[in-house]
Length: 366
Ligand SMILES: [Zn+2]
View 1 (tube, protein in one colour):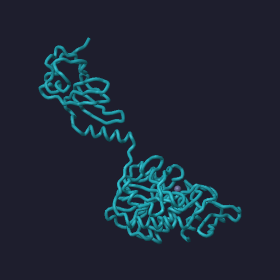
View 2: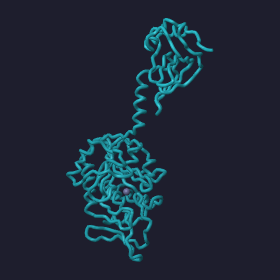
View 3: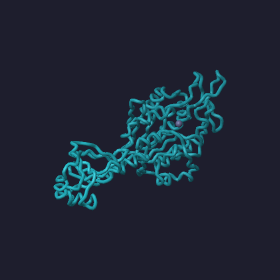
View 4: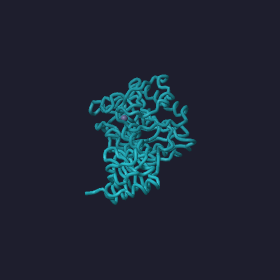
C-alpha cells in the first residue's frame, strides 16, 4: 500500500509526467540498481533488467493520468478492499490516476522480483498514445510478448482493440485467461494498439488492473483485483518464456507485400522485354526500374516502343521468343527515350532472336 499511495500522491496529467518519471527513476535506483533505465525525447522510459537469454518478457504501462484536480491535501483513503482519493479541504473525492498507476505499481513490483524483464512506460497515453506512437521500437526487438495492465475492473482483458488484433491465438491460449477468471472483450485505443500498428512483431494484451470509473474524480481501486492482476502477470512471466510472434498488416500493407513478392520473382533489370500493362497496352524496351506501389507495379522503360498492333506471332509469348514473322504488317511506334508505365501485369524478357526481329519492325507514324 505504501508504494501505491506514493504513486497516487503524484499528480501526472498528460504533458506533465515529469514528477512521475523522476519518481520511477529514483525508485529503481534505490530498489533495482542493476536495471538499465533509458529516457527518450518524449519522456518514455525503457527499463531492462537481466540478460536476455533468448528474449525478455515485457511489460508496459503509462505514466500519465486524465484528472486535473489534485488538491494540496489530497489523501488516499482505504475502506475495506476499496481505495479512493479525498480532499478534506474540498470535502470531495479526487481521482487517483489509478489508470494507470496500478499498472506502474505492477511493473515496479515485477522489476523488484523478476530476474529478467523489460518494461516500457509511456507518456501521453490518454491523449492519443503520444509516447507509444513514437516509441523507439528497437527496444522491443528481443521482446517475447507484452503484457500491459491497463484495463478497468477485474475481469475483462483485451487483445482486440478497435477491430485490430494485437495478439496471436496461440498466445491467447497459452495465457489460460479463463482459468484466472479473465474473459476477452474488445478494447479501445491503448499503448498496445499503437505498438502493434508500429509493427512490434509480438503478441500484446491489456489486462484488468483493478481500477474503476477511470478518468473521473470518483475513480477507485479494488485492491484484490489489482493484486490478482499482479499474481497473474508474475505467473505469466514465470511460465511463458518463448516468443509469441504477431504482426498486424492492413489491407494496403498486404497488397504492397504481395506485389513486392511478385516483383522479386524475376530480375529483368536492363533486359529487353515485352511489357503488358492492365490498361496502357503493350510495350517493347529495356526495363531500367521496377517498383511496387499501392496502385500496382510500375516500370521505367528505356528506348521504349509502343506495340500498337502486330502480325506474324500468335501471342505475346511467341513474340518474345520468336519475334514476328511479318514485320511489315506490324504497327510499332517511334522510340521514346524513357518512359514510365503503371499497372504492369506481364513482363517477358525477349530472346536474342526476338530482339533482332522486333528491332527490324519499321516505325509506324504519320
Ligand atoms: Zn490507461
